[in-house]
Image (cartoon, rainbow, N blue to C red; front, side, top):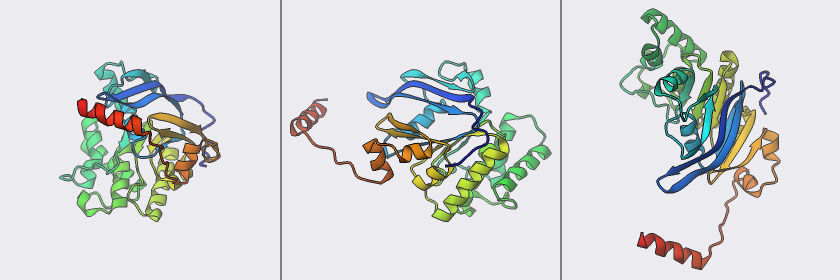
Length: 273
């Protein structure tokens, strides 16, 4: 488990209460409640379709939930005005799963973009700030390359540089280690921790990579079928007596018993609708 010197400060910076969400008529998140403390790394884990990426989208206020509340840095993001949400997002950095760099822009232009869009800084200052962040992620000298010229690990680091270029209070990462070999993934984990410590950020990470989660998390939330199975420190999650949690950690396949009558009824109802 990662021991953070800032975990002693238990100030809550994110609070999710009884969050319920739907895609059409399908319920995705079912009464999810959690909190994130100042300075910690919270990892959200779960199998495919568990709702972890959906939860991240709602924490970023990209969609409105069916019910429940989400408070970010004391701000109710479900009911706040667009201008308030715009101001809040300046305090949040996001590193998307695929990097999401603009392919028509150089690495440096990608990193500088948030500063150009959201500050009144002069161009020279913007360039200096962008180069500083590229130094931090070990990409100094690569600012004039195009994203297509970077390796997978370099793309992830460039995405992190862009996410933190405005020194956000919160950093959200979606599957930061996905698709990387173990050595590169481990280096990226270390980088996230260094950034957290250097910038004093709180970090929320969605991942299905167990090694990464166990290495960098202060606490872990395990989702399954839209509900929280367990939440706690790395050791608490590892020692959970919940069978479904252990199945996830040990990559055990759950075989669902099939009721022939219920299965036939479901097929019939789907056909009628």
